[in-house]
Length: 276
Image 1: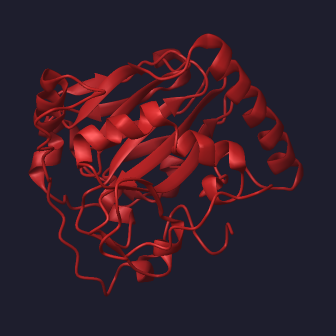
Image 2: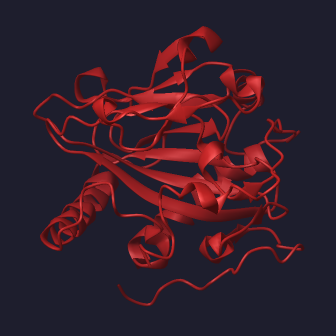
């Protein structure tokens, strides 16, 4: 599964694909999980943060599951960033992707019909020295149009001390930005770097308690510094889009309908895995 769905696509994954990359604002008139003001803030700033999803006991249980999964992953010779498309492999992650309070946030921002297609653990180990350069998520994906919202669930507490994410507020309105290949010296977890990113808006640290989440547009500039602390920083990225989004290179196999209907038939809508 990991080989079939790369977390960071090769250039040929998207080189020949015509993509519509622009921000599509939320148009929900009667949001349920969010307030009308929060929907307006998402449209204006490109993100929301400090959304409480799980209580302390619940996130402790999820962290225990991840601890065991990470131990097996490292023992197999993979690294802490390699656990991707996990909802098709692990029932516990499927249950997070389809968790009603999380889906309700996606529905308020995307509309009544929602596909969940991504679940990737971004785990920065203590002192691992790897940064995530300023980038836009939509740059990486063989998908069009750009209608994905990412909900980033904090498995561990994330703060400035252990290299939490930062957003460039309002940068999603700039459209698709030019990027360059990251240099080896950058120690980038990914492979793209947007130069002069801070010229596009205010830098906003995204400090989250464990069990809280943020949500951001697929065109919002974001990144994080290297974790130089003695604390781990793990988050689970959950990706949601509307069913009219088209994915190439078999990426449609990732998608499952989490609410509403898929009238377009663009996604495989595979069932919940019965076991790991």
